[in-house]
Length: 203
Image 1 (spheres, one colour):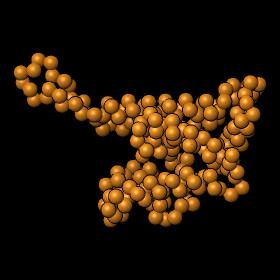
Image 2 (cartoon, one colour; image 1 turned 45 degrees about the vertical axis):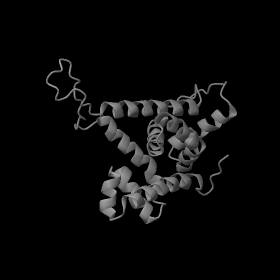
Image 3 (cartoon, helix red, strand yellow; image 1 turned 90 degrees about the horizontal axis):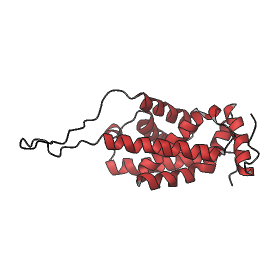
Image 4 (cartoon, helix red, strand yellow; image 1 turned 120 degrees about the horizontal axis):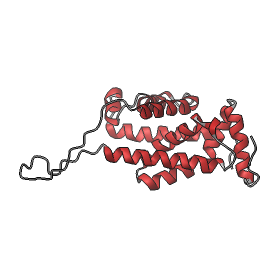
C-alpha cells in the first residue's frame, strides 16, 4: 500500500508498527498502545470527566483500533485514525448513557396534559456491546496473564464477565472500597505491563 509522502517520520514509524502488528507481532501492538495510551486517556477524560470511564473507554478504543487494524490506510497518520475511533466511541458511550436515564418528570401527574415520557433501558442484547466486550478481551488477553493472580481476577471479573463493583465485592468477600482501590491499581498495572515489556523501548 502506497504511503502518503506527507506523513511525518513519527507517522511513518507508526505505519511500520501497524504492518508488523497485522502480521501478529504482539510487541508492535504493545508499542502502539504505549505511544498513545496517555494522550487518548486524557482526551477521553476531558470528554467524560470520570477517570474510571476514561480508563474503560481507553481500553475500548485500542480494542476497536486493533480489531480493525488491517483497515487502516497510510493516507493519513495512524494517530489521526486512532483518535477518531476513540472520540467516536466516546460519543456513542455518552449518547447511550443519556438514553439509559429514566425520566419521571410529570409521571403520575394526572392533571398534566403533556407528561414527559418515561424512558426505560432496553434489556435486549446490543450487538455492538457484545463486540466491544470481545474487543476488550482480545486486547487484554495478551497482557493480563502477566498480572499477579489477585489483580488478574479483578480484571477478569470486571471486564471479561462485566461484574459491577458491588458484585465483585460479594464474589471476593471484600469491602467495596477495597475493590475499587485494587481495581484501579490493577488497571494501572495492566497499562504499565505494556510499557515495561522486555525489549520494548518507548520514547
